[in-house]
Length: 346
Image (cartoon, rainbow, N blue to C red; front, side, top):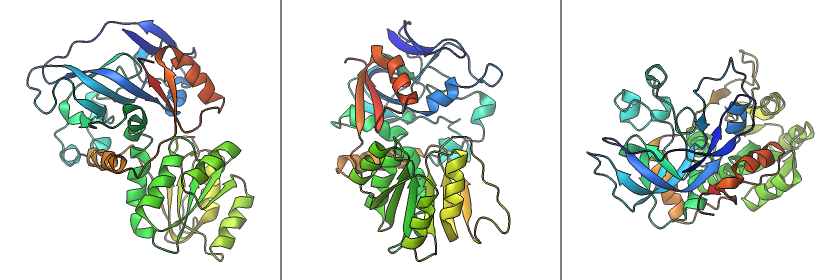
């Protein structure tokens, strides 16, 4: 089969031929129908040889959708022909967190060498994907896999973050979304669907600000220091109730701290490498600064239901599998709007 693999540190990924895996007991083989491409892959491929934690070659792609092609022994929840998406942050399956569907926070996964597809084990940017357990599959029925597959990360990650701050998104509040790209434009839609907060989006790119407005943002501003004054004006000087930073660079983390009001939430979701000093005096009193990682399996089930009800409209750019390396080039150049999705069969 054909697969997009990262073969050598510092070199761009390539499309190569690899063997089709065979499912063992408890495993499921998917014929991939869609695979989302994430900016975090660029971060992974930007690590030095000393930093890189995975074995090479690595088949990329941690957003996967497919049709069940074959199952191993003792698989009962899915059958051949079922259309599913893959829950990506795999855990041990037996600890307290995993028993609640919070495998994204499994404390045993790292020690046991359990890693997500595309982030340590073969991912979805291929014609076939091997999944280790039926509990990591969520049926999607007749939903379009191309527009649904981004929900497994670009939807699940902001959904998890929004739910953690939901109590502060009351009517009259102002929420700032920094970064209106693949995750941010879905986050805006979720905020509008789940709350009555006023959503202000920030992005350095005009086309992303336009996407933010189409996604439901009340205002979209350039991501610069002037935006701090605008947010303060909108809130009569009080500041934002919640800030979601889907970039996480130093400049955006600094903006988040300047915009946050008393007893607010600052959610650093992006992995841009910025840091925010926290002390008794800064950020404002009562501010909760947090990070989050992916989301829970029950939340992915909820997201699929929201998609089924037509509450989400993920903006996707579609590519063939052979175009996989070019997708990363376009992403690095800032030319992807919304989420890039690779469709192995064209």
